[in-house]
Image (cartoon, rainbow, N blue to C red; front, top):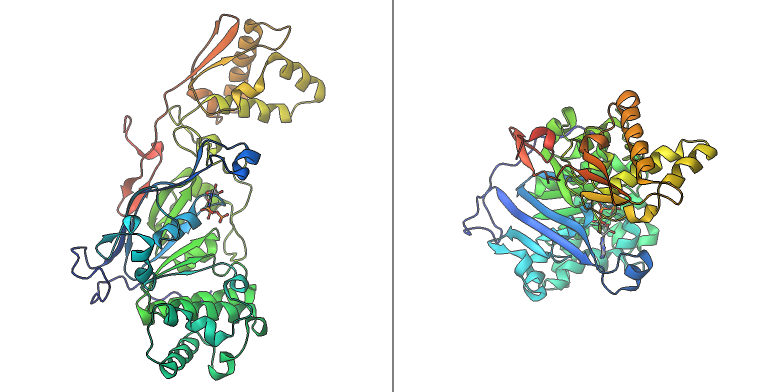
Length: 452
Ligand SMILES: Nc1ncnc2c1ncn2[C@@H]1O[C@H](COP(=O)(O)OP(=O)(O)OP(=O)(O)O)[C@@H](O)[C@H]1O
């Protein structure tokens, strides 16, 4: 990886629509309590996936300050909401709540017609350069497209000159060699350069780059990132870099926001987040990539499986079911009891599994979210006393063999009631993103005062 130039986040003369708006000069965008919920009602996909009636909380209460000249990395596993957040900052997805202050206006309230002129200033670079360029359009037409849309040139001569200038800026030189070529004539790296030329041609101030190098050959990835840094320096750009590739984020970003299920769980200067991760999720992500290895992406071997369904996020802290450091009030609920049993049963011999499984009646009743008081029906031929004794045995065993299993700490009482077993959990608390040190904020009860 090339060396990283100094950050240029200092204030500069402000030619943007934000000038004179009362915003601080170095702040480009201010995001408050942003929500993007996708309704699942009615659609065919919703019916097939069984998610009908709910909402996918792709972005759920995000606060961000984007400073001019900054490279902000949105990092997290697949499904954490990075792309949706990035698109919403540009008005490509509509927010369902909260605000995005930019240029003295709230983008979330603008009609499509009023958003259109702002789009010149807010550009997106997508992951797949092949899909980003129309195969039947030559580079001259594709790269200059924004000039026509936003009516930025007086005549063909000016058009041609601006396209040639943009191509040269991104290293497609001499420009004349590329103007009449088609995307299929270019390599992957050259295509992404052309995409960048199109993104900068209308003189934007913010670029949201969604995995801009992940589909490129390893040999050109660093070159494209270096080109982006050069463009940022020369054109006073600000970047939001969406990625699950921690190594490139470490190199490329000034600030990192780690996302999990639609929320930011840790945020701060890249150096601090990488050198001293605080949230257990950030720690797990970083522990899983050995350094230095720019080829690795976020691995799948995080504790306890995949990111949960964003339509039914876990109670309290969304990360608690996968978190080895979870506390009693992190949000334990009946789904966690089922997950605990299933994890245990996976390791049992068939006859042991059959014996234990038979103790519990309808396991599906434990599949839904909440509540924190759950009734467990014994299996046929078994009594509540059998189930209660079983649970108590599991808890005892866990305290000896798995002292780090946090689930049982979240159980307050277990008792019999009317032929069923009642398991009650500690009331869930939702962690808020709070400053922990200087400019690092973390959403985790490990860092919050009791009762916070
Ligand atoms: N248009 C949509 N309609 C319904 N759900 C959506 C839509 N777009 C995204 N989602 C859902 O929102 C959640 C967040 O998706 P998003 O693509 O923003 O995450 P991501 O972190 O960028 O993931 P990836 O790295 O896989 O792109 C996911 O559960 C996804 O299925």
